[in-house]
Structure formats: structure tokens, C-alpha cells
Image (cartoon, rainbow, N blue to C red):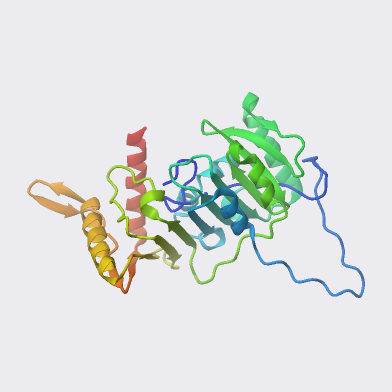
Length: 322
């Protein structure tokens, strides 16, 4: 969905090595301090990295992928790639997103702005592996890659997939990946206390403010009514690989919500079907929305086989665009 990112065709990703103090040497692991004897340890601060990323980008689109909840899914590699194309920066570095990353958070101003995007990777990789991975990113970028001097945390410019990305290890467990244009904003993530754990059983959650204006509807996808103020959704995976999808959005009032639900349902039926001679055949069963007050709500169980079909069709469409 997003050009520089992809989060639920929204969501995305990066952050490496140690941070803290004035030490800017990427080869020097950072450590904490031991509490004084007899002094009760302070409770850890509430996670705030997501809030800092939203503020830094002015995000109207954001979402979280809880990687630990998709590790055993049959389509795990495709799912993490869809959720965060930024993880391509990690390829060949020895860092494996499915094994080494706990959560991915992506924030973007809009689908039409490829610069104001920030992806955060919360990981559990030790300092030595992180510094080696970050150096590998720079080396693989050739003349386009370099360390950025003068930052209070290890920062580099890398070149992957024909574009430049800024990679910053803002904390020992948080890697930020963004565009070089966001360099000054990355500083607001220094010392961030992490990404929140899931509230329920969801593996992925996403939010879009003013979706009609914020999202860049590709050709062939159903338009979103301008009266939808926001939309949010979750995906929860079952042990057999199936997924429970829940989406809801806020309309202007109950009457408008009913109209919006009908408009979206009609558009989805058309978008997920194909004309076969004199009849129209449903290729993919769409989610169906119903109005509840001024809210639109839709639930759909997607089987593993359907997921494989959807990913295959999306891959074919992407290839045809190229």
C-alpha cells in the first residue's frame, strides 16, 4: 500500500546497535548501570516509541506487527515482507526478522508521501551481531553507503532496492529505518522505551485517519467514501493458519453509515470478481460491512488457502506493474 513501506498493504521497518551518552562509535556496545544496593529498582517506563514515531512523521497511517505471533505460520516469510518491506535492508546481514525481531511499528504521513515514513524494529539481537549487521549494510551499499558522523547513536545511510534509507540504532533494542530526509526527526526516538505489547490476540493492527484523503487508492481498488473519518483493523491468526480479520470505521452519522456500508460492499463485490462472458464470477469472497450506529464493522475468516491465493494474485499484479 505504501510506496516506501507497506503496512497491511499498509505496514513496515529498521533500528540497530547501541545508543547512549556521547559515544558515537558503532563498534562500542552500550551497557546500563547497576542499581545501588538497598535502592528499590524503578519500574520500567511505559512504551512510547510508537507515539514518538507518530509525532515525528505527522502520521495518519500506522500499524504494528507482532512478529512472535506469526513465526510459526506457514506463510510467515510472505507476511513479514508484506508488513514491512523495509526489512529488505536486513537481507544478507545475518539478522533474521522472523527470529530476531519481536515487533515492527510503521508510521507514515500518507500513502502519497514516500519521505515522511518511519519504521521501527524492536529486536533482541546482541551488540556484536548488530554492529556486524550494520557494517554489512554499509558495505553492501557500495559508494552509496556511509556512516553518518556526529550523531549520538550509530547512524548510517544505506542503498537497497534502488533507494537510500537511513538506519539508526536509537537504543540497544530499537532500530529505526526511514528516509534520509527524516534524519533530524530520528533524534526524537533516542531513548525510546519500546513498542507496546498487543492488547488482545491480534498479530497485526492498523489505523488510518481520513482514509479517502490519506490512502492512495491504486487503480482497480474500491474507493473509500469521503465520509469515513477513520478506519482501524486487526488480524488474528489461528493455529491452523486461518486468519480472523476485523475492520471498523467511523462515519458521519447512522444514516450515512448505512449508505457507506452499501457503497463499500458494492465496490468490494465488483473489485473481487471478474466478468466471465455474460456472468460475473466471484474470485475472492470479500468482507461484508454492516452499520452499527455511526460505525461500520466487518468481520471475515480468511482460510490459509484463500491467503495463498490473495498473496499470489498480489504478486502477479506487482509483476505486471513493473
